[in-house]
Length: 193
Image (tube, rainbow, N blue to C red; front, side, top):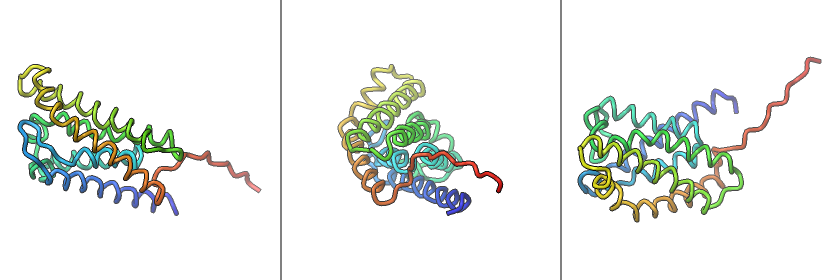
């Protein structure tokens, strides 16, 4: 397959993951100030299935759609006011989280395991996202960091830990059937004959 075809295919798959994150926002339990959604599940899967570059691209597409007013955020919200509202730190961290999840997945491919992917998801899909989200929530709302953690992270820990394992299992199965991530192989130079 040519590089152009691969790039178009990867861009389409990245856009599909952005769409999955938007759909995950429609499946929500409205818990103020941060609703429970399936969005972070798809963020983790984007990184571990697409890899660093395309995982970050997929989440960047999502953030751009939200910024331009597309109703892709939780409960069908969109626009800059929603993007930079109390939950903005979580959302803005997703491209970075997907990139880092993808980078660590690529480093271990093809020797991936559920335990390894779950650990990567916990570190970058939960801890990193919580750090950015809770800090932003504290800043925007004026509540102390401990209060922001109690409201914006603590209730979500059990569900997010389940999501890390589910994302790892699904990503590993997808990887075994249709690996998007491949170890980079050095290109051999061709000599003129």
